[in-house]
Image (cartoon, rainbow over all chains, first blue to last red; front, side, top):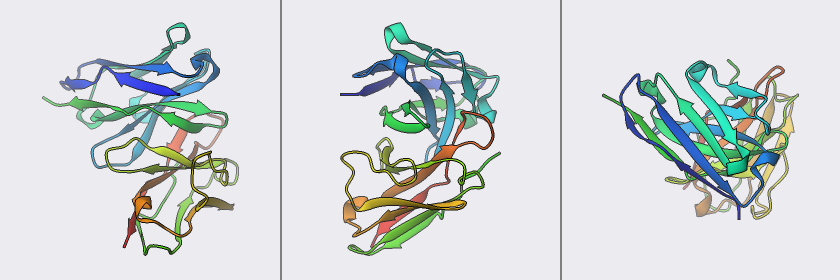
Length: 118
Length: 109
């Protein structure tokens, strides 16, 4: 059974940093692109970033470019999202998501809440 | 930035057909997916490559594509289909960025 379990969320002040982790099981992480998707309270889904299987390519939504960094450790079946210079508008539930061929987001974690507030 | 546009809400009676549209200029060149999200839950894939249904998704869920618009069709709507639905595709241009539609709340009357 495929499982994606996020951790590392919580409350942080504006300008602070947080590192999200995602533990993957039930499949071979190295075979897939991986994404982070977020959802602000009461709002829609927003794709945040993704990373190629070997981490040689990474893409970001404009609003986080230069502040967030996606990475992965295939040997440890883990995906990460380093979030710096956090803003109030980054407050959201963050989902770890597996990408299948063609950008199909076929497996989702349960999500982790990040709250940016003073 | 590239956008996918959906109607904010669709209302349908049980047993009737719900159609949710998603419009975007790059859709003629990019496949689209659809996701269902119920309150307090993570999204779930219900349609991929415009018309394909993952295993385990009921046959009443189907998709179609025409030009710059893709459509999610729920035939014989059931109360359990009440949820938010999002389309998703690739960003326009030579990139692996992804983009979501604005979302549609389906209400079963």
